[in-house]
Image (cartoon, rainbow, N blue to C red; front, side, top):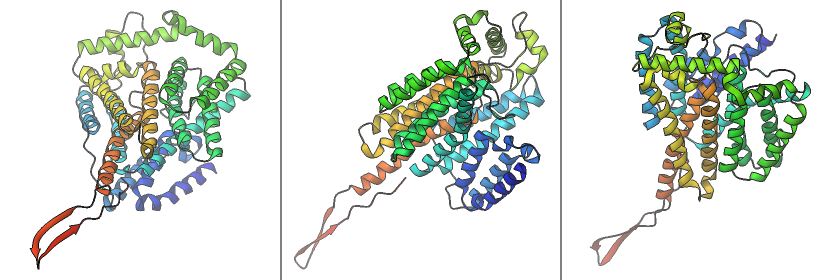
Length: 447
């Protein structure tokens, strides 16, 4: 029954996507982050909803009046170059079949990231994208937080199966990346009940992160909390929420959670963390021997390559670090491009913060740029021990970082035209009079 209801709902969305491509982008984001089809049990579970929505969205763009040009920026150029580079590295991959399968997944993600760059061209559309991300991931944050409180931390919080966030570490990372976006919406909310509701969502999501039992998630949560204090506004409200999460953690998290978190103090002596370090050594050795092209996607699945490049006695596993994984799979040039994407995104937000810090009408952009930086910080921190180098949310957030300066640039241009004073032009004398023309100021337009 659940599958049928979901299928009918998705079919009902098709006309809206065909007439409004932006609706397709929102539906794609919802499917990609919340994975509602993974909550079904029959045919809807494995049906390729994401691909269908992506195709319909592309058709809608083709026949719509929407702009069909990707804005030229350092981010968009780097992203294209990085995608082309992965084609080269995949061509020489250790495990060709698995590598090409993973490349197709990554390429499909970037297609919709490019759609984001094309379609998100106003403040209102940016707000809709943020809301969709928050609603999609906050579902698991709030659900996990409630479960953790009810069961007193007795069960590990996991994401939907067969998704980017199925693993406890990946879910914790995604929730840490979502917290700043919830905070952004709370700062922008004008109604008290909205502020309270979003604050409650932050509280439960924070508890949900603890309930994942992810040590990397705990570190990222601490980093995000500190960054929110440094970059955010209205710190008293934020401080109350932090104290509430700390109080709940003290009273609800069991001894096994505390024991697991205590292993952070002696990482080199603990089995799971030690195997992570071994996977980093494997990645470094692959890059040293194949510095330009690495081993391609999923190279760690090759038993022969693992025995050749891993340290003695290492247990074969995925490379648990977004940095070491890119290094092993895409070589040093690929890692440089990956880091450049993060750096350009950070600098875009820094630029927006600088030019909007004293502008009341642009306070939304200041807050969003600040919170996007905190989200990127969460990705980079939790990613040090996760495999999510190609997580779709991270690339869409970087696209939003690239779009903010162009939005403000377009708005500033319109405002400059609107504020132009009347011009007086003296023409030739006609019948003894001076001909004078006054140009009225133009009205500003939304970006």
